[in-house]
Structures are given as structure tokens and as C-alpha cells.
Length: 367
Image (cartoon, rainbow, N blue to C red; front, side, top):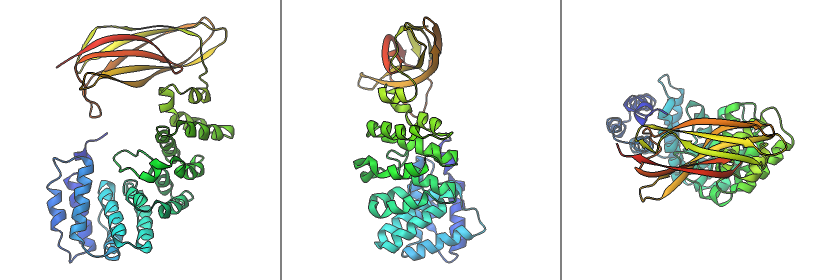
């Protein structure tokens, strides 16, 4: 994933300023000009918010005036796409809410649908969903039949319960069934990007109501098309890692009689930035061939000294009765932006078809 300075940096901010200036030649744009020079220390979300606020400050008129300027920028000759669209769409949502009318709300939704192909309006739509969920959802549902796959994707992605970088929508968290009609309309979509959004949406829902997700995927698998299996596997990935029995069975991983040996580590310590290797042996001790989802659980130390587990995919294997397999893998402790490592005791476990076995402990050393 590129860093914030590669996505929404000063060149994008200056391009936004130029497009708005061309659309509103008599407007002074001091806030946008200042924001372009103030992005460096900020996160991606903070950069978008700063540019949104600058847009709102420099174009202080009513909703219709603001929307008119944005439409002129859309139709203009200067670049008006990419990451600069994020602050534009959130500014539209803010102005539509401030206007306080159904007409402005509905027009704001239309503008987000029109802008989403230029990057995405998935973050901005959250503001309108949170403001008036009941009014927004019929419009969202209508997008599921749009000709543009970017708009169909917006219907699913914009309503995800835990969309990364986005605000939460209380109505979705309170009633996870509220977005199911959108998913039912899109799970057979011809576009792979739309289907992947549906799978990610269902995966989000599994954090709230795993039974609902399992029931939904079971219904889809009862009458699948050529893409349903892949979609369901992606949608159930978190439940599989958690060892949910119903999700595992749906994907063909039934309770198994296996002997698990290990994990055996190649060292008892690992330095920060290094890797630790391990080996796992598995034998089918049953009388029938068995399909196995083999994962491993890495227990990282937290700042308070306790351990927290994260499950990683290892392999999918099918073993005949009496057959065995040996799996070898290494786990990296290099620095990444999504996790902070703490030195001290760590542990590794094996998980086969949702059942955890074996435990090997080691120590992560400080730099």
C-alpha cells in the first residue's frame, strides 16, 4: 500500500486548487493554497479532512452554489480525478447535510454516484448514511442495477460495516441485516471487483453476526453460478481462521481425525526484523480421505505483557488414510505499518480444520 505522501500529496492538492479555480475563476482560494503546503506531517485521512475543510472555507455559499462549482470542475478540461476526489466528495456530503433539505440530500447522493468512478465516494457516503439511513438506503439499492460497475460497487463498499479509513454508521452496526438486500442483488454481478466488495462486506458482517453470514452463504451455495464458490471462500475467510464449524463445513473442511506434530521451531529467539522458521507434521489417522485447512496462530506480545493471537493461512491439503505431510514456513518480524512488535515471550500454535493443537514458545529480542 503506498504511503500517504504518494496518494494525497501537494501535487494532488494543487491540481484540486487549479480545477476549482478554473470552475470558479472569481473565487479566492487561500485555504486550499495553504492546505497544499501543510500536508506533510498528516495521515491520509487527516490530509483528506484538511482539504475538505479548505474547500468548504473557500466556497462558502449554499449547497446549490457549491454543487454547481463541483459540476463545473467535473466538466472542465483540467484533471479532476484520483485521490483529490476524496475531499471533494466528503465536502459535498457535508454541504448536503447542512442544507437540511431532502432535495439537497438526494442531489448529494446523485453527485457521489457520478464522482465515484473518478476514485471512489465510499468514504463520503458514510456521512449521508449516518445522517439519514432510511432515506439513503433506497437510493443505494437503486445503484445495484446501475450500468456502471463503479456505482454498483459503491452500493456494497460504501455500506460495509467496517470499511477501512471510514467512519462507522450506527444503523448498520445496530442491524446487520439492513444491507443484505444490497448483497443479494450483487453477489452474482458480472464484475469481479463488485463481487469482491460483496465478499468483503460479508466478511465484515461476520464480526457482528456469524450465523447470519453462514446462513447467507449457504443460501447462495444452494444455487451457485461459476463465481459463487470463490466469493464465498473470500467472504468466510475470517470465520475459517476463527475455526467456525459451519463455515468450515461449507467450504468442505469436515471434522478430521489427524495426528499433529509440532510446531517445531528453528530457534528459541528471534531478533526484531528477523524471521523464525517452523515445521509442522500432519497425518490422517482416519479411515477416509480428509481435506484440511491448515493455519497457524501467532501470539504476539502486547505492550501490557499479555499475548494476542493472529491467525495466518498456511496450506490446504487433502490426505488419504494414513498419509502424512510436512509443512515448513517462516514468519517475519520485520517492521510494518499495521502492527507494533513488543519484545518478550511469544508463542505459535497449529490450527487444523478449526482445531488448535501444539504450542511452541520463543522470545522476540529488542533491536
